Image (tube, rainbow, N blue to C red):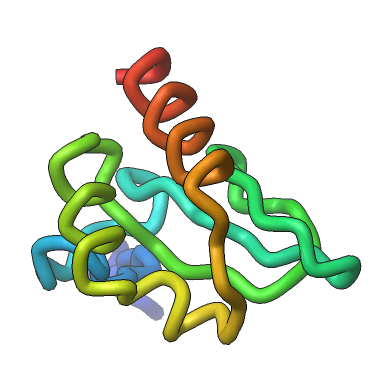
Length: 95
């Protein structure tokens, strides 16, 4: 007979923000994804296919990543200024 009080708790996946370096639950972070065709976009659902990098849903963390080129390094792609501006605008609209 199993004790119901000791039921296993589901472990939430965590990811580290490239801006501030804090580990947070995956659902609290925004994912920047490099699609197989090489395009870079913001993936708030976490379901787009491609290589992803995580950042807090905070424009300041995204700006830190931009200055240090952390997302570019992680995704192994150069991100044009137009795409950075679009990412910032999209993230600011979803705060």
